[in-house]
Image 1 (tube, rainbow, N blue to C red):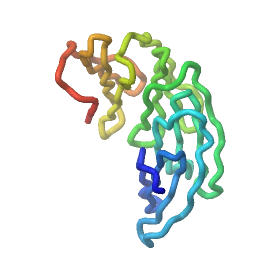
Image 2 (cartoon, one colour; image 1 turned 90 degrees about the horizontal axis):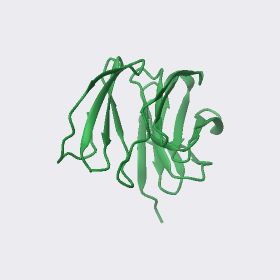
Image 3 (cartoon, helix red, strand yellow; image 1 turned 120 degrees about the vertical axis):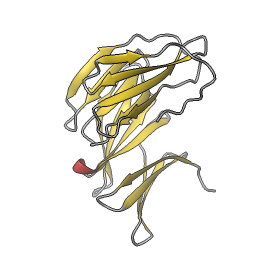
Image 4 (cartoon, rainbow, N blue to C red; image 1 turned 30 degrees about the horizontal axis):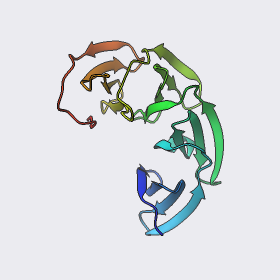
Length: 184
């Protein structure tokens, strides 16, 4: 039986596409030769939250809802645990230049890591109350200097906060209704 696709990430340097499947496997494909590069099981006991290519590390970072951060070395097809965020992760995103990993924890802490897994920023936003199953969404400006965070209040109304690369709040919208979870 085939497993559904959860996440897709691409690596332009390798001309490869990586697919995370619902059965907790990652399959890599060579776009040029149209062949499978590898298939590996993801060693995470919770749900996979995100998958992001980090070409400068020849790796893929996988974030899990329980707070586990895993690094998949693409050459060796081996996993290395690189972090465990207390309380779990609500959302994660890599900056367009691949230098930063942004995570928002379930306890309301925004954490930014560099490619050596040093914590550059740790900022308390407050856990807040959001509807069950609702997850925030992050979108970066193309230059990587700013990002927007779309979140939901307990009332179901959404709001957008804009931060600079150092997680300094630059703007915050009023609450609004009638918008899905997509953000660009």
